[in-house]
Image (cartoon, rainbow, N blue to C red):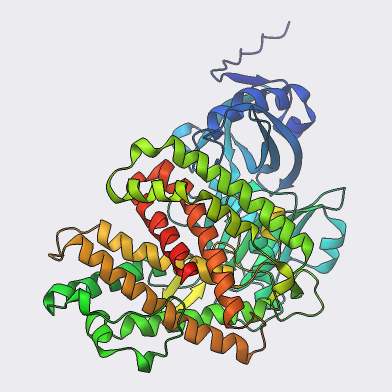
Length: 549
């Protein structure tokens, strides 16, 4: 008579009859994974974008298996359905590790589980070095033949020679995506929230590297895409060159502006006597009045001019392809006008509701400006509806779409543009719509405005000048920064035959896009930083005043 087998003692909450190798063929595992395991994990993650909505249920919609010599991994696509009748898709690479908890590579555990008596931990595979090396090697070993035969498409740019894996580490804190630095030379961004379409960041990064000569962006290195049976393609990750840098342009601009504002007191500048210029007036640096140079210095204008040049070069590159229809410049038409108006009226109504429900959070000038905004709602609505495409002679192109100082890196007195995913609130289809390049320019102008006001609001006691005088000086400085940017930008794009229209059309489009941006900002500020609501409100008031002049 044989001895009885020693009983297996399970301490995990989740025990499955299947093996890990067959987990996603087992309906019981899939059901428990989606209904019990995932929700507890995902709600705590920074990259989860559904925190303000009520999660209804989670579906596993697809999966793929990937194996190394040591481990089996799954790439899992999940669909999160919300009570508010919409859904979001996410990508999670999974691994099952049989280790004592103290010996795990990471503290980030999804759940303790048991497969056929084998106890271990479900872990996000990005936290396992074996997985990170596996996907790196597959990108580096890419061949065209592999791409044709595979559902998971690993791609390496022809501009890059393959290299061996040396190391990998996480880049900074967790954001809306997860970024891994490889060999201290490359950065791979794993997209957490995904879309049933190629990600714009992947599309534009690859286009700028392989089909244009625009050098001021991290070069495209490789990617992982998933080819669906219906012909759609999902971008799972993007690998780019790692740029050594001195930080982003937002931080850089705040340092510059703090120095500028120190001059008000140090040089005893009379703010009321600072010369002013009309909004959008082109301003060559060598014609800036000496009083403005005395106040702001020359460096800030030199940097604004360099940033304008890089912005122009980006747009010239994005409008340079006459074969690839995704990047060919196109004219305005009725379909675009209808799409634009519907989108903006929907956003505008949303912001009206938000401001009406949050008036109690405002006081002083912000409350006064909010009331003016409500009084002028008819005028703003009519402005958005006043987009007459038949008068537009310029062209639309693929643009950055979420362009601001935080999307720009500074390195050795130059600027590098990155993160082409587009506006976070927009659908993936809307992010790919060709737009006036001046929409990016307007986004950067709003960022200048924010940087000026942020410097004033975050005054740590280093400025003795009154806040009102700082606001007044800031508005003058803002116009000169715009003037310098416009001079460099317009001259460059027109020299390279990118059609952005002439003076009247340029100013109409800037007014239109600036107002759109400022109204867009209102929602975020009212919900997150009511004290800062004055920034978009002042921007809106200034644009409406400029329209009447």
